[in-house]
Length: 139
Image (cartoon, rainbow, N blue to C red; front, top):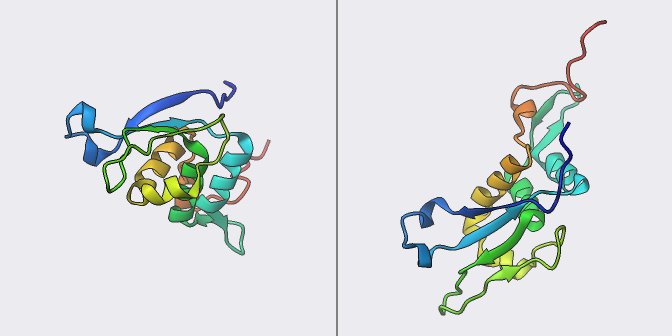
């Protein structure tokens, strides 16, 4: 097993910005989530029905939680007046302020899904209807 580090980050450009000149692209710095944050996102991403089988949960809420915890910085983010409103987290694990999330509302699903992918949270277990706790073989 390879241990997780919340210091690891990647740079991400939204699909719609990739055609823009490099100096006009908004660049998001996305990071690894802590164990607690991962489980909070996972709890939104999947849920168990009354039989214990996993089922898909609330994608929007899980993406919002992933963005709150997983965005470490944003460069070249402009408000409607063209003012730079870039963001930098104080430390890994800091939650992104609401006003920043409000400014990127149209990107939350794409960014949240990328943060979940980066952190190994796919929700595939729910899509497969896996029992909570997984399949156990007989030994």
